Length: 389
Image 1 (cartoon, rainbow, N blue to C red):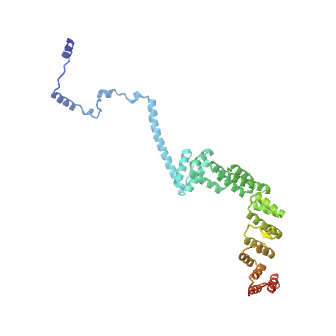
Image 2: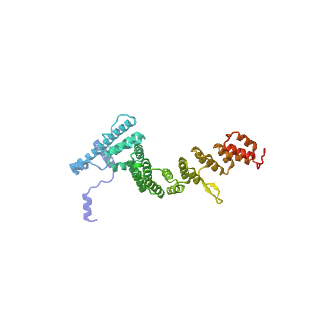
Image 3: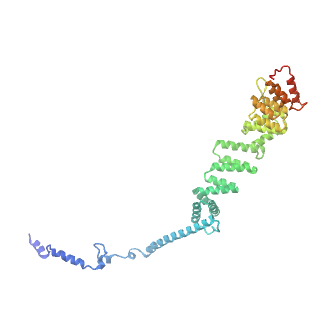
């Protein structure tokens, strides 16, 4: 060990370890003042005194902004809660049919709160009241956006427009909601109801339609209005053509142009010819010649209803008899003959069955000296008949 080391150890005084030292440290700790309790380990009064205050680290302007922002946020929450309380009270008054006013609600936020609260009540009157208030106080684009976001409110508004017959606004709203098909059908429906501007509305319908079938139907209606000069049904147009031309073939051409079914055409022609009392045209319509040159029924309508219509409109008995005779089913033929007093057919049925007694009884029901009475008498006296009784 050199002289330097000797100096170091001689100058420094180190005490060796002793259990008495441990007792000294314990006594020292117990003497620390109570004020220092609660400080973190390793902290001292000197360190606490060295900590700088917040106003020395940040400027007064920045501190003011921080605290003002906190106060503003708190005030905003309180304001929103106050508005919501007022909204709930107003909607409750609407639902309960009490006095209320919506005039104090100016901001978009308040109006949306009103709508949400009304929707939560599921009360149709409250919902519609708020929706009408919105449409009167908001720009169209904003109002439409709100409707798109709230389908239930939109549905109530559409029903309201329909009930008030606000057609243009209703169609615009349906289009805006993406319900183009509904818009087209609604416009078409109102067009049919109002002959004065139906052509204009039909043209709009044709532009709205995406389906070829719909376009075809609408085009036929446009053509129909163009031909008649006003809105009439196809049946009415065919009826007028029948009265003007009184020709079955020309009427068929008009009917085919507008895809009128065979039954619709026959019913229209039959009614028209009956009104005209033109039984020759009725024959032209109902009868065709077969390959042997004999008449046969060419009819889509039920024969019973057809004969009934002819009977009501005063068709001669000979016409009714001619049509009923062409019915192949004997039971149906006899039933219709009895129903419409076609005596010749009933008499023929007795002769066919060789029922002399039945024919004698039936003859007593006929008017004497009538054509049917003489016809029955001829059958009964015929030497060619072989009766069963």
